[in-house]
Length: 313
Image 1 (spheres, rainbow, N blue to C red):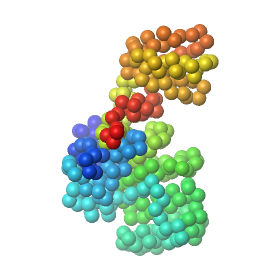
Image 2 (image 1 turned 180 degrees about the vertical axis):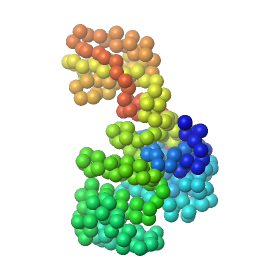
Image 3 (image 1 turned 30 degrees about the vertical axis):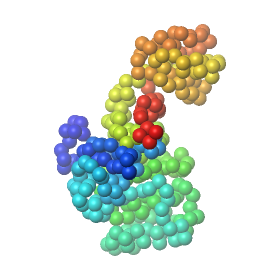
């Protein structure tokens, strides 16, 4: 069943035509999006593509200039206060008090949301995210990974139904990122809906479904296989000596849309299979080994970036 055919009761987010302008610039352009309850939905796109602006409209921090729809059953235009109470929003920048302890920060957030039995809720959050042993430590003394855990604990303190995460793992080490994603999948399994923006391709592949935004426009969406298939991108990998010179030659040939270094190989991609094969034939050298591969998400990501029009140019 596609998202368009989903029962409205199954949808945490159901919006059409959502638009936001700042001055003469349209930064979110008529986006339709449906996200099922309990789903991890990934948002991809270059910096300035409108991802953060779109998220802020969903959680009631910004009012759309056009479009309509619901978030958790509430009207995104008229019931923003109700939405805010049921959403946890984790921003890109650590936004808690660095001169307060972890427990004090969580207690403060619990007060804001008027959480019943606040002390128990704070302790439960500390225990769940493995923060209990650090509860008296000042937030400003934490490393990036531990700050991330505190921020997630704060987002969950009021038991939200929707979690909006804006590049939550930027700047943290691989182990902390893996532990964070394990927690996110557990939360989703418990019924929490998660909308997350990321630039990490391995994280995007952990999402149930994806949407790709570029300069305010929604260019692709679906499951990972659907996004890869929809790009209709042909990719070849080549290994051997002199790849720098080979890359320069390939970039001049018709049908070659991107040539990207991947370790000791090059990925050569384009949307016309015949033109790509003709380009490869023109530069073939017995020293090089060519092989056609399935286009990866990063190949598709770069291709979509290259074909998108910058609305601020």
